[in-house]
Amino acid sequence: MTYQLRTYVIPPGRMGDILHRFETVTMALFKKHGLEVIGFWTVTEPEEVSELVYLLRFPDEEASEVAWKAFREDPEWQEARRRTEASGPIVAQVIEKTLVPTGFSPLQ
Image 1 (cartoon, rainbow, N blue to C red):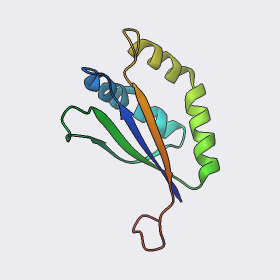
Image 2: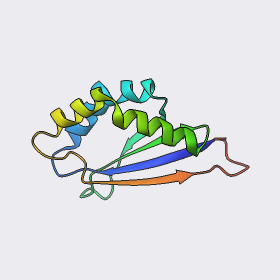
Image 3: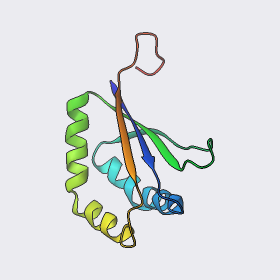
Image 4: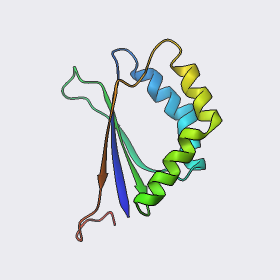
């Protein structure tokens, strides 16, 4: 298994917009395309930082690449992104890290 840790830096005042998009559109599309979500978190400290962090699990890196490609090419996703970002981006920066569990990790 491999894991992907994604951190989205959110522009001021847009956290509600990104959370709403995940809840109403993105989560269903993730499921459709095989993006298995382990968990989501918002960062509360430091208070001036607005970040959404989530962890995904894949059988391997190839499966990750295939799933992300299908997701990004999905017309429903493209329309949702266009609609929800009509008044400007709701993600300022994406920080992505691929994680491989250690032999003693409970997440294997």
